[in-house]
Length: 215
Image (cartoon, rainbow, N blue to C red; front, side, top):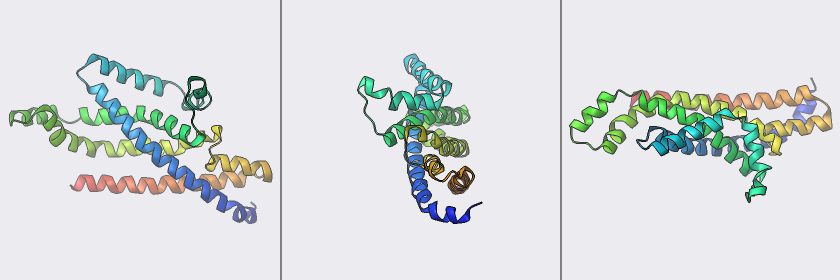
């Protein structure tokens, strides 16, 4: 293994790792937003909204994320959607992971005992008040770990945006392979940086989970 080469290229990989972190952060926030809306639709009393929620989840979970990225980035200009590679990556992956988060959030909400909401209603709370003050706090505790799994999968999935030329870790590794012909070192360095990002993210999620269970 060429350690001198690794020392020479690692600053470029650190810059790419920062891009991966930003991409993961923005995508997670968009995914949580889409997931919350999707869960609200899936739990709605209105049939139209439930159907819309099912269609959203079915499409984005039932088709490859890379196809969704290509549709948005390469096909978007045909329908008037002009996005740069980073924006397309955030929106494409965010909407995709949001479909998975939809089911995570919905599952946590429906797992809360219905009797507690009914008891809150008997105490004079409205349906919205009982959901906000009784059901949601318990559901939030239950969804932290599953959402953490979604986020870890998302971080690894950011490698897909290399296909639309976002200069993140995977793209950087591929670029240096073309000039150094040392795929082992390049992919090893990228893999180690991915592992560090995922490890730190996992520690943060574990901390949130412990805090939620104490409160």
